[in-house]
Image (cartoon, rainbow, N blue to C red; front, side, top):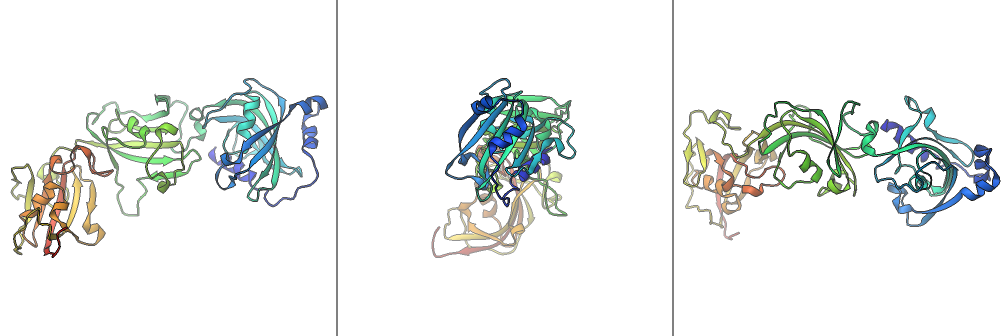
Length: 441
């Protein structure tokens, strides 16, 4: 159904190249109103001033424009103010002033419903007009100066069945289709949820971290995020989120509080709960509603140290498990032969050059110098405490696996989006060189 709305909108823009003849709006009104007297027609012609800034995308302009609304039947609920994401279910026909049809919802292919849902934000003047008429009414709108060159007027006629909350119009919601049996649940005043599968076992419900496969959409169906879309041959990496972490958008944070392994659901986040930092980088416009399809594909306790045969990365075999006084765990993979001069964590004039790969305790890789194709060079005091301690006693050419508890890593704050709070970290480290510089960092 979303394609139909896009089709209507495309047709609305299709008359850019048409010329304008002398057919007046009153003449077009006369053709469709027939049995309404001239006096009534004059009385119902009601100009409304609207701001062109409210129009979508490239058609916005600074000047104010006039639309004229002719009420055919007033309907009920006049002056009803639709919400920002409400949908009008209606019949709609539109044409140029030459009388050429631009759209007709009753003739759209593959549409069985007599009254179809139409986005109030996609048809110019419609939101202002519906406030004058209300559900059950009929009206005609004359709208001028719309189009890429701002000079092409058109007329459309609307018969309104009702106005519905966007979340109740299942056929317009992008992503996984919502069938009639799927119940709408309000988990917040601004968040709707539809559950496709609810795991009866509730496995992992007490684990602090959930791992998600997610697709995010805008209201018009544009996909703005999908972690499962990866290059051929690569395995998708689930999104790991802490239930206690302050994450954005707020709607997502609220939705994952009580989920368990296997749960599959859709949420819709309104203006208050859809805000996200750097949204423009994902192509998310300001004040956009976000729709998310979410599958819980894993859960974990990020503080747990895996058994040696579960450790990701290099195989430790039967190598000794070493533990320092601070709680750092390491396995010597290769001792190395290069001896370097005295090195301390505070040695700002000495830098280490190394290769490393970092993992969460569930095996998810969050960083790797090898993947970047270049060794990493920095003073030891620039690394987290556990990493610096583990490298400090290595020999050049040596390899170690470090198992770093959260208190020696990023602690309760976490390390950004990739490292949840209280995460134990695992690093495979190869010390390539120790460089002495003349200047302390």
